Image (tube, rainbow over all chains, first blue to last red; front, side, top):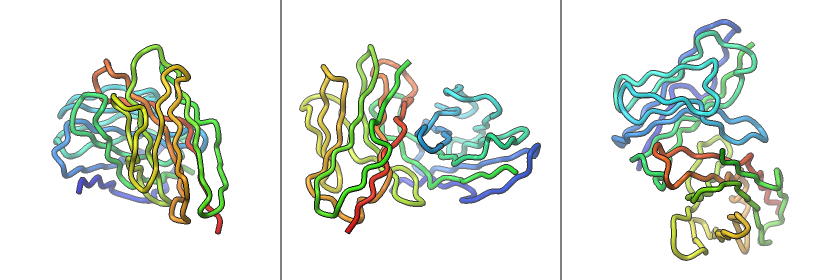
Length: 114
Length: 115
């Protein structure tokens, strides 16, 4: 089974803190993605990466950055957390670049910024 | 830009009754279509996808969806639901010609199956 793991299920941080969310996949997938999930808005793409050290902005990249130093690991960074970044964050991976590939999701990290 | 509309945010349904979840997309390009399900406290998993061919697609757990190009819809159905189908369901599209495997999701539909 494909497995995507995220470092924390729940995280509470203070405004202004630097926050790291880690994601690891074990299926040698090329692509990795970070989404945020908010009620009524579904999932919105923050960043994605199609190769090591490569990254592309998604639909809502403001306030976030990412790092992919190894193929299996994709990190989401909140440089200075704000309360409007309180959300559920989901990581995903997929095998290839074509649009028909299924994405495999981690269990999510619920981040609260106070 | 693509957009996906799920017309119902919540759908209560009794056990063993049928359910239909509606999804419409707005796109001037050809798309691949997906339905994902999120069970409580879990990530998303794929229910089914339409790539080409027959417009009726069968997925896991007895779900099926029908692609209607003229109405730009991809509605999800199950003839008889179980308590275990309580979950949130997401419709998603990706552009056939765009690289990067990017998905655009709808807002989700919460299904609550009542005994």
